[in-house]
Image (cartoon, rainbow, N blue to C red; front, side, top):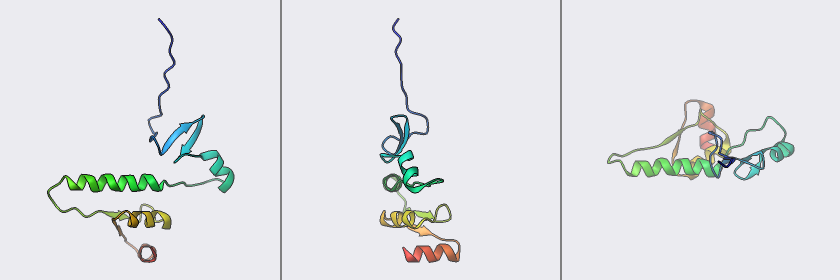
Length: 108
């Protein structure tokens, strides 16, 4: 019986977006330690390609339903201006629930 090492991805990995490369966390191909070296810590990193892919998956799922569906991103979940811009550019609306959220949505 031969011993074979099987390397598997962690359960939280998202191939192409969030994965381990060379024993480092990689976010959209960027090494997390390099990002921290450049921008310091704590650091929040959002994946524009992943946001767009998630929205595309929702829109594709809606195409399979025989009812009109309108998607709105709840800005209270994350009102980072770059995230809001990506959401809007991806073709869905932004739901707001406060004056601050409205201000940001209108700015985008």
